[in-house]
Amino acid sequence: MLLMGRKTADTLNDALKLKVDQLKTKPRLEIILVGDNPASQSYVKGKLKTASKLGMIVNITNLPEIASQKDVERLITDFNFKKEVNGILLQLPLPAHMDSDYLISLIDYKKDVDGFHTMNQGLLFQKRAGIRPATPLGIMMLLDHYQIPIEGQHVVIIGRSQIVGAPLAKMFLDRNATVTITHSKTKNLAMHTKQADILVAAIGKPKFVTKDMVKEGAVVIDVGINRVDGKLTGDVDFDNVEPIASYITPVPKGVGPMTICALAHNLYHLYIEQEKNKS
Image 1 (spheres, rainbow, N blue to C red):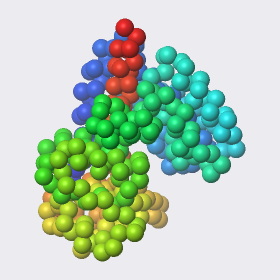
Image 2 (image 1 turned 45 degrees about the vertical axis):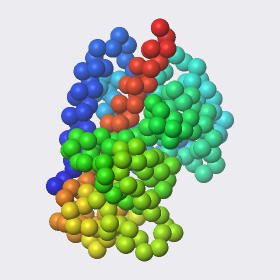
Image 3 (image 1 turned 60 degrees about the horizontal axis):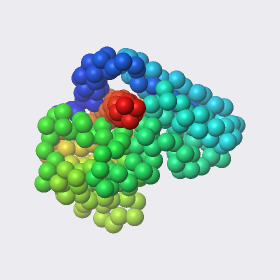
Image 4 (image 1 turned 120 degrees about the vertical axis):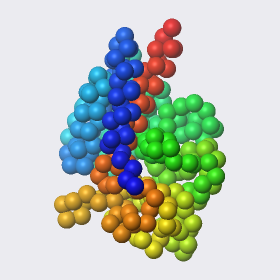
């Protein structure tokens, strides 16, 4: 069965719009985009489209590839101090001459819509309220929408990035799953993946996960977005894995729309918290 991220996102966003419509002002997001990377341009357009449908305000500042790191620093500082700005998103990847980690650290964590700031990551690992990284949050929202059990399940994640793999593992642990994280140095990878009740592929290698790596009846979450011969494909060999999986996300229309959905929910929660602090 397909886990349809786009349809799920539409349903969840419809419910969110009802909440946004009742706000006295609209949540405002500032997106900083550096360069003209086609994938980044596409992602930003998707975020803009979703937020606009929800009645949120989104502004995009597109700097040229040759912009300096100081240019980005000045923008972040400006947005941090503007009370009418509820969320700040620094679109990744950045040009090689910029330090992504440092720039993310400059964002006020109370406006960190991506959940990448070390403060928000710390809150996650302390099981305290905070903004969760959008892709892991979107995956959990998708599983919950389809009422797929998590507690007691063996989850295997291929990939250990701070954006997806590591925070997602913690979120599964907090839901009482047993979690195995694998990566490029893992020996006998298939031995681990074949034990997974829920298998998450997040490594950026097209069709890396093959049928012989998946247990029959497993739930397969494909985070990968790769372009091969002009077409988008995931990290999973979808055509061969889909027949043996109980649930699987397609690429596109799977995890991607859920990431944007989670971003919108994060922006709403940032707005609510900031309004509480005003009173």
